[in-house]
Length: 144
Image: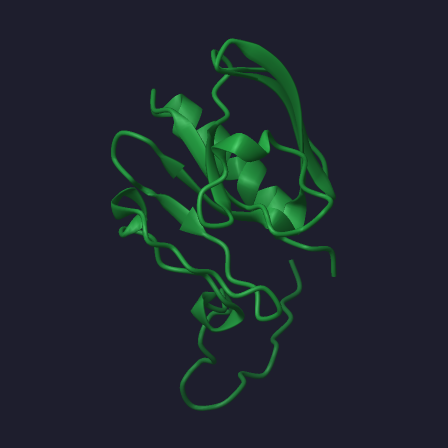
């Protein structure tokens, strides 16, 4: 199976924009592969506004989120490996999703992110209908 994080990230990004909200992402900057302006990193994390008004050339692939943003008036290329993105949420309402990763524990301390509940495999419900009562029924054919 492919990783679901990039698919969820793209879907939630669209949902946030369609809801006329501003999409923010929480990024763990501890990996050397994360390219962000380090002077804005606090406690190994950075929150980025990835709305169309804030960034140019946003690309969300299966492996990376890439864009160009402005920091203190200076243009900067941002490259984020998918596993470094810890959450996506609406700046105004705080609604969104924190990504759970057993190999990559998440520590969220921002008050804007308290509405999140990490999604894990046990949270996904099976869409299979319940088995009929009384056991399986015998198929019947009818001549028309």
